[in-house]
Length: 104
Image: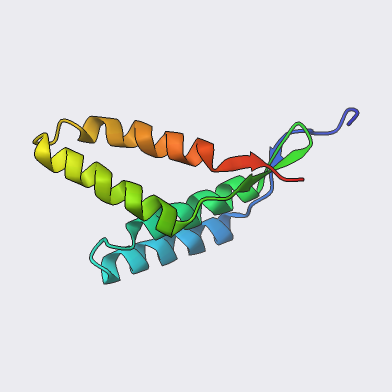
């Protein structure tokens, strides 16, 4: 790509603020049930505006796909008296990575 920037982020601040506010509103109004939707919406926006070495990233995850994992993770956290909660962050990052590719 020459001397130009080959890796960059092209999202805007006001877009980000809008997505975060929307995510908070949806999460609060649904008493946390739609939190997986907020996660996928905001993370998808971040990834879809990221270019690495001239290749745009693409997020393919869905809220429904995450919701099943979310229920399972909370169940394990409950039955282990919170101990499994330490792994939820790692599991979420793994799920994000599995649903992120380079766009064609």
